[in-house]
Length: 285
Length: 184
Image 1 (cartoon, rainbow over the protein chains, first blue to last red):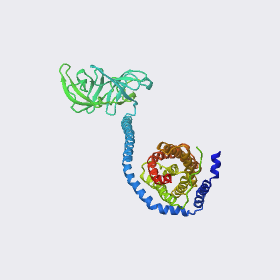
Image 2: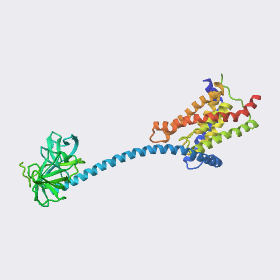
Image 3: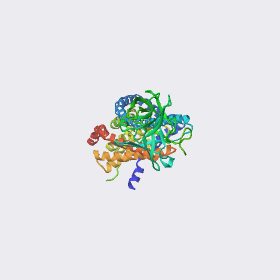
Image 4: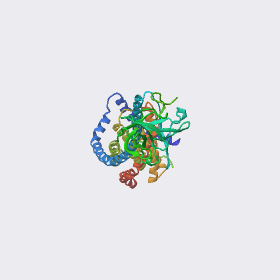
C-alpha cells in the first residue's frame, strides 16, 4: 500500500504515465482517421536506411538458412512423393487387374456372341494341386453357382477340361491333357472323327493325342481339332487344338495324331464353365 | 528494503544528455533489427521482442527513470515500425515495464545474470499476455490454441534466447555511467 502511495506521489511516474498514454492513444487515433502521425513518419524515414541494411543482412542469412530449410523440405517432399508413388503403384496394379478382367470379359463376350446357345459361369483358378499322375485345378465356383460335375471348362482360346468334383463354393477340374480326360473331336477341315485323350507320357509336355482315326483319313499337320459333341460332356464346336504330328498305330491299325491344345493350359487363371448348352448337344438336360 | 525514488539529475546535465544519446542506441537498434532482420532472415518463424529486452535491461542496470523513458521511446518505435492499424498501447506497456522492473531490481534482486534471466522470464510472459489480449481484440474468430502455439510461445522462447547476448550488450552500454555515478 505504501508502495502504491509512494508511486502515486511520484511526479516522474505520473508524468511518464501521462506521456505514455498520450503516445499510445494519439498515433492510433490519427491512423484511424487516416492521418499518419508525424513522429511515426519521421521515425520510419530516419530508420529506413538502417532497416534496409539489416534487411539485406537478414536476406543474406535467409539464403544460408534456406539451404537447410530446403534440405528439410526436400526430405519431407521426398517422403510425400514416396507415399504418393506407392499410391500410384497400387493404382497401376489395380488398373492392370481391371485391364486383365476387361480383357477376359471381352473374350467372354466374344464367346457368348459366338455361342448364343451356351450359358456360362465365369470362375477363377484358386488352387492347383499337382501330383505325378494328375493335376487338378480348384475353381472359385460351386453348387451355389449352379456348377455340376462334367461341365466343360473353356477359355477364349479353346477347351480346357471339365469339372470332376463340386462343393458349395468350389469345384475341381481336370485338364484335357490329363489321362482321365477324353473328348470326342473331329478335324474341322475334313470332318474326320476321333477321340482326344490325355496320356501319361504327353501330359508332362502339355499336349494330348487324337486316337481312333481311320488310316485313310484326310488329316494333316496343322489341322484344327474341335469337339464333336459325341459323349455328352462337351458341346459340339469347341476348339481343342491343332495337329502337330501324325503316326500310324501298328497294333490297332489306326492313325494317332498329337494335338497341341489351343488354350494356354499352363497359365490359365480365369475361365468359363459352360453350365448349359442345347444346340448341337447330345446331352439331355 | 524500502522503495525510494531514483536519485534525480538535471535533464540538461552532460551525464543525462550522454545517457540519452547512448541509451537511444540499443533501443533504436533493437527496434530496427526486430522489424527488419528477423523478418528478412527467416531464421525463425517468429520475431523476438528486442525492444522489451533493451527496456528491461536499461531499467535493471540504470534504474526506473531510465527504464520508463526508454520504455516510452521503445513504445513509440514499436508503434512506428508496426502496421499502425491497431492501438497496441506499446508506449504504455514498455514504460510500465521499464519503470517497475527498475524499481523491483533496485529493491529485491541483484544485477547478475541469474536475476536478468528471471526478469526476462517475467517480461516475456507479460509480452505474451499483451499479444493474447491484442489478438483477442483484433481477430474475429479467436483461436487461443493457435495464438499460443503460433505466436505467444515461439515469441516467448526466442525473446528469452535473445536476452542472453543482450545482457552483455546492455551491461556494456550502461557501464561508463555507473562508474561515474558510483564515483559521485
